[in-house]
Amino acid sequence: MMGDISGLLHDISVWVLPVLTAITLHEAAHGWVAWKLGDATAHRLGRVSFNPLRHVDRFGTILLPGLLLASTSFMPGGTPFMFGYAKPVPVNFRQLHHPRRDMVLVAAAGPGINIAMAFAAAVLLHAIPWLPADLGPWVGENLENALLLNIVLAIFNMLPLPPLDGGRVLTGLLPPALAVPFARIERYGMLIIIGALVLPPLIAAQMGTSFNLIGWILWPPVQYVGSLVLMLAGWGS
Image (tube, rainbow, N blue to C red; front, side, top):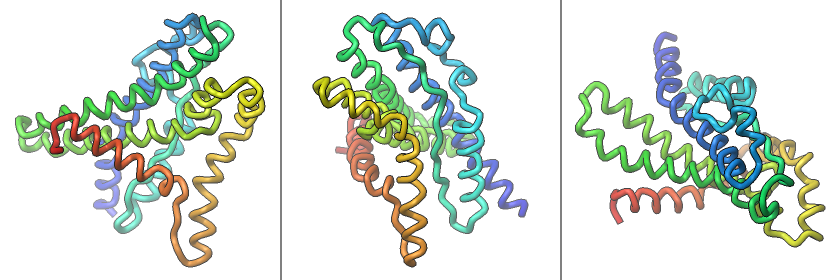
């Protein structure tokens, strides 16, 4: 039992900084780009900030990931499965200088900063051999988790479904006749996402097999982008 608790505390210690950093800069990037392109809503509300407390959603950022982390940590051979969300940054698209074009830039800013953070984590991994022997492995796990988490977060958010960033990007790129009906999907978007996360594994389990729809969709681009980031950061060719 003590080993299980120790393992859980270790998992928390190597995930909390990557998670908080990833979601904080992701949301702050949305607000900062919107502010620079004409909409100061997020800036006035204090959301253009590096303070994680400005962006934390009690359920989506703390309770849900914590429950998922705990449920896998107490399973033999369990691998942490992380899913959560932060408070969305408010953007008044009508205040943007060029609403349709700027909507795309604001939406893409979050995944863009996540890719930048993944690259930074990959570069910083080169410094691990110079750290004290008792600190290096822990810092290395944090950086490896930051590398993976930021890439997964970027790819996941670019799925073309509102309210994800990819849905906003696609809405801005579509002609108005298609963009308006497509944007209406947003009211059902989170239900669709949760259903895609939960239902296929449950159905597969009833059939005596395993299947993760979101993982099946995400893993190939995550592998590709991860390999590219590592190559650019100097980890092989």
